[in-house]
Length: 273
Image (cartoon, rainbow, N blue to C red; front, top):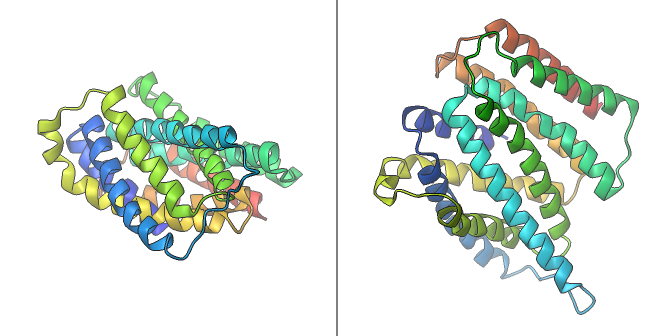
């Protein structure tokens, strides 16, 4: 959770000053691919591939493609939102991934839904809508769209990756996601390669934090309920609010942020109770 927060904080600092989102995304994914490649080489020495002759290769290929494209959508939306929107606002809106993860767990993993989970999900949605509705026309629709799309893409990616853990080691799944995104980025978006050096160092540091964080999270997801793990993982948003206020000087709509933070906290506590 702490490593994931460092990922958000450092990337927000960099992209706030230099909004080179596509270049940052490309450097980030290349670094993650290299780091996870090391994990994969180590893990494959004592792990085994779990699919056999009975495994449907087309289904496995579909899962792999779904993982790559969902990670692509998440990464692109995330860095776009971080470049132009305050960390606290993006962080609270991102908590909707808890709601989507509950729905994903019910539909695809046969997890049960309780009345407390319904209440918790509604509180999180309310918190996100409260902070996402500015009192002035100062935030563009596209910025909010990226902030809302990112948790949806992330939920799909993590749900697909959880399914893939039944067939592949965690490091292999990570490598597929990161390397696939790195390959797609220059194909789908314009990259100014001469400007990558301006964001490369920050991107490499955040990539190290992000890849290790998700590797550990994927290990936990393989052993625990999808919805509960995702809910606990979201508690980092309180750290994001503090960091945004004291370090990034993001002081706008403070009362609305505090109210949203309280509602989101109540929602998460209700979900995991």
